[in-house]
Amino acid sequence: MIYAANFKTNHTRKSTALYMQTLNEKLRAKNPEDKVYIFPPSTALEKYVGDFTVGTQNAYPAHNGAYTGEIGVEQLDEFDIKTILIGHSERRELLNESQENVAAKFSFFKAQDFEIIYCIGEPLEVREKGFEAVMKYLLAQFDGIDTEYEKLIVAYEPIWAIGTGRSATVEEISSTHRALKKAINEKPLLYGGSAKPANIKEITSIAGVDGVLVGSASLDAESFFQMISHQ
Ligand code: PGA
Image (cartoon, rainbow, N blue to C red; front, top):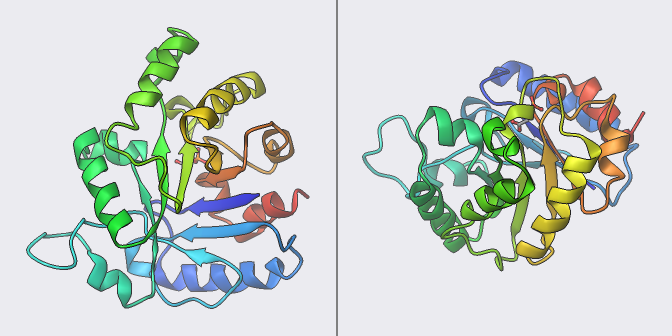
């Protein structure tokens, strides 16, 4: 299983360092086949040593240049970061990243040989229209995306389940993952949206779920490790 922590705009450089240390001590007990990713805020990127991979929540598709407020490959190289989240619904919605922007970012970081966790997800009004509408919406989020890319991991995160405390039901996750798996050439597929210690066993036992992308419940190292170890 894959366990990915997305801190979003939470934690400082100092608290992230403490988190990494705390988590890494606990990770000695993890199943060696499980893989852990941490996406701290950009200000907390560092060459952390541990049984996990550190990625960036975002970057501009350039090595360097005049892109005020952004970071590029040059800044990521400094910390050996070779993993990126692309297409998160918060960036699509709050920062107006279009499918075109997202696809351009994907192509650029693919060319840089980055491992990409590519996020997709539908809003509530689409889910309410039924399964067919959901699949149509989700498949459109693969426009311009190379689903054959070998370093691709996909995260399905229904927008209405993110940060709401209400995860999708087993049936919703199961049917969506089954259909998505075919569309993405059986690439690893994570579920995200209110995944937490209380529902981790149920979610990870669904066929077609290869792991989770966790926001709120990942902010505390103890809670995140509870998920990793299914305690
Ligand atoms: P959540 O966020 O776990 O707080 O719902 C998930 C995500 O946005 O990756």
